[in-house]
Length: 289
Ligand code: NAP
Image (cartoon, rainbow, N blue to C red):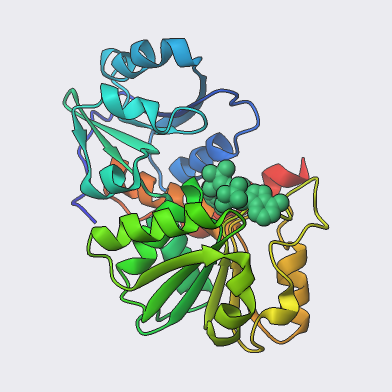
């Protein structure tokens, strides 16, 4: 983590999240609780930005002296063209979720995949090196997660997707960037791949509210004792996780990914450790209201 940033103490540090829609976002509750707990004079605003106003909104970060913003659906890809610098991993992932304003220079990062891996290691599987990983799904979330997993030097990563071509294309693209042993196929290979996987990660939307009875794959195919992780956090425990837990698997839900992508962004902006447990509690409390 970089050295603590110096700010003018008489002015609040301004942060926010740009998206459309934005009213449902849990990020303001999470980051405002973090700022308070860390004793930082600051505020984090929900910023409703229509796609045709995205460029003006990004210019506004500098004009209004925001320290930084998060970027969410549908702006994560489009925003890249308006930034001065794109971090290498965000360029490879093809999406930015965090912007830092360093004296008028805007730099884009992607903290989703790194946040996911930090959550997985802290909450379920401390060591990923040498592991055989199966990833279900080949969309935007899968891309960031696989990139960050590959940096941990697993033995191999296999992508299983409903649409086989997308899994094969994503694996080939990431392999081409020297990210190790990454392969892809359709769900017809699920039994073989899941039988030997140490970690199974669902990055599909199957099982997300309101389709809580959906499964991305039959949990009976997963080896007993494997770790099973789901990016979905609504519900906090998906059917995949519930049934895997009952079969003796270690399970890991998606709330931690959301909390840690925010924690990594907070640390980029402020240069101090993020109060992770406060952030987790704030998100959980915002579900209950
Ligand atoms: P996306 O780009 O639209 O990709 C969706 C993926 O899910 C595709 O691989 C798609 O397969 C597959 N899929 C969708 N419905 C399916 C179903 N019923 N059965 C099997 N496969 C299905 O979406 P995304 O942005 O990657 O997001 C995926 C999930 O990650 C969402 O549930 C989202 O909530 C979650 N997520 C969580 C966090 C977090 O902070 N915890 C962050 C980001 C995303 P095809 O290619 O065959 O269509």
